[in-house]
Image (tube, rainbow, N blue to C red; front, side, top):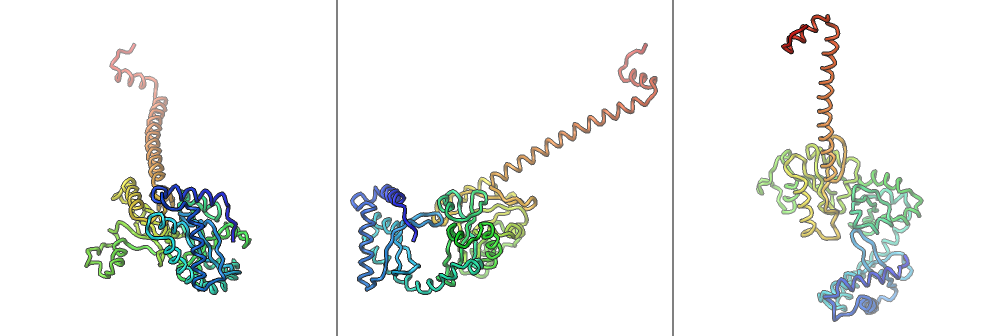
Length: 392
């Protein structure tokens, strides 16, 4: 188990006290709560006749969040289950329920999870073997800013203001939907470089979690349990579809398809060319054809409103909109795309003016050369006629 930095824990406790100060004025402070909560957790295990457990405190870094936890594990085991002290205190401070009830509910969940520990322990040897684990590699895309601290501890690859991180899909070891974030420490133990990890992930992720791109009408129909789109008035021809949803079959960490080598080409094919990408969440992306129907500002407002009112903070990707130029093969922030297009238009205008200037200079030069070849009298005569003057 990793050692816990005492200063970090103290700072975290202070933040928790400040966050819930107005709602927990008459309740215990965070550190006092945590001490009492740990006693209740240990007592719950004893009451259930489970005595061979250890309770250790740690800060857990997850995508979009860091939380304070008690890690529960059987004595001598390498596998543990986390109880979120942060979640427990939030419920307690908001007067949702009392501390004893919270502890009891969390211990009940933990006991069920610990029953799977023997199976997980059997898979530890596999987890320690990169040759086995590389075939379980998948990718996830997260906000680089929100996850700055997490990114210091995990291998990653930047994509604009986002970052690709890597996970091992361990549902065959732990259970359905389970995955483990690859850390720098794990990579050191494997003796594998970040570059090799990325190469292996790019190869394996599409096989484990293939790209799924569907029209929004089709997605809505499935959510409503309706197979006949015409019944809902959603039988939109593919060429008229204005929004597509991109994810993976189980819709978990589906925004990771952004890092797949062939994603942009497949999305451009469905969108009919250039397109915008709206980060719906860490689980899916929205693809909007760049056909003049929607402008960048409107799309940005849409994303920010949905993130603020609908998306859970733990699942938020970013508030920005992105663009893909299918001709130049460029993926970039929407605002960068507008700037690049403005520069191209300006260069085209300057090029046109430069061409006009060169053409005029060329005509004058040609006229001068033509005049130099004519007899002198002819030149003088031409000049007299044009000016209307008397020649002497």
